[in-house]
Length: 103
Length: 234
Image (cartoon, rainbow over all chains, first blue to last red; front, side):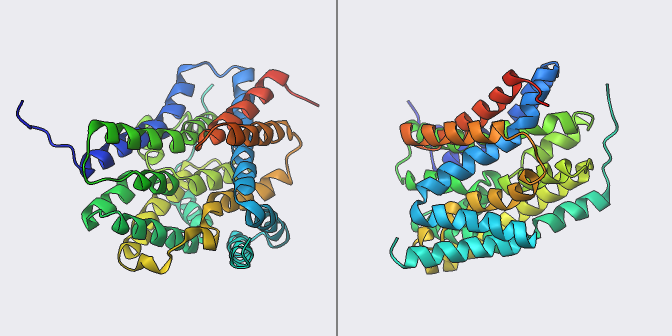
């Protein structure tokens, strides 16, 4: 066996890039193969809300006290100021404070 | 039924503008990922290529933990598996854009989907929920944040050791914060909370039962399915 192909870091980066690219494109492609019945459409319309919730809540819980306190602070800041920048800064600030206090 | 979807520079500019608030966070996150890549022995070229072609901070962080100098196909399978698990949510975010973007030529949509990130997707969903239909917005937001990510993670490679513990700055919560900020205005307008409640409950259960990042896709798919099955409510 001659080593015509050597596996390197580049192989790893290439493999990750291909997998990620396929994931980014496949959902859109798959939905196009199906007829958009009212049921499918309802599911797709609900998908963003479900995806937001399924990301935010478990991550906040995994984040411990900082996650459980800082995440609602982000939402509250956003609700009051309508500024994403302020909301993110408030969240990072709160999380940094809570974590530096040892929680 | 086909409907017309505009593609304008106004939309592109609006997409870029709505993503500006994420730039500072991108630089902090980029510093972390860049530093971790340097720590793990990636060359500068490798680090830049990874940022440009994978462009998914959480997947990169997890995969870098498995990085090695002695590559075998087993290792390749492991990092590919990480990319699959952590990025599975992109299947769902891409799917959710289809009803809106279906009339746009595939040659425009797929390249943009190729660099779609969480904040760009979320900003697009918010824009669409407020009545926006311009594909330029999605393109502007996605491409702008893709370039920002490449630029932001580059200095990190050299100076990122300043951020030794990403958790200390709440960076493990960055996606949660981004989504919470974008979700708030959407949620205050919506009337049907079923997909969010099911998504959150199933997501939490899955995160407790299954190691890794599967919980996002499992929770999101469950929430969407619940909405599809239950049917329209008054």
